[in-house]
Image (cartoon, rainbow, N blue to C red; front, side, top):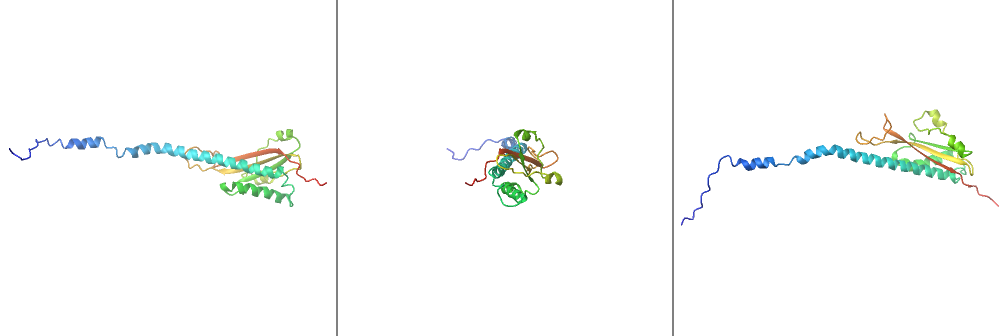
Length: 200
């Protein structure tokens, strides 16, 4: 009985190519890169759009919070009872709002504040003048009223903040046509409280 290893039958010289062809047909090493190149633009568009919208609504909420703080100073008589000139009183409100809005940049080229008093709510409703923003002509900015009013008077506090959008030319563009900015306007209407202290 022979203990030698049996000789394997000879294979065709072309058979050794079959496994290589199968590996080539099933090779998917570059599929991920191709798929990512197809999905990446849509993913980036959605990502930047979501961030832009979220940051815009955050800016809106901060502007609303700032006008509410300014209105509180006027409504409770804190501004009216301050010692100093009207400009100094205005500066107090301006600085208060800027402390809230400093997240978005300097206020000197972005913020305007209007404080106007009305005799009746009918007069208020009849005032349809648009808000004056910081990009208006200097004469219009100088003419913005600052009249905080006396006790029980009707007051409107309105601010305009020019918000710089952050859209990097992909996704949703919230800026106004031809610019990279958007005007955020917020108003608050109220009647002043009886803030003066009555002495017996």
